[in-house]
Length: 102
Picture (tube, rainbow, N blue to C red):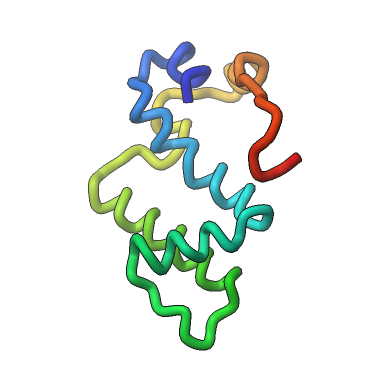
């Protein structure tokens, strides 16, 4: 999020809103049990007859719907990011060791 803000002057919260869901969907296969728990515990989604993958996806869908209800920015393009900024944003992104995807 911070790298996006450096190019657009968007607030940290706005940039996090724009990048979080794509990131969560990208890492979901590597932490599916945690995302399934998120769906159950945060959104109250029933696990009955569902795989962890289905439950996790429903949880992220619920998060997306809630974010839209709040009127949050959902795409970096909505913050003013253009194609010519992408390389610089990527170069400014800090990659930390650890996390879900090694």
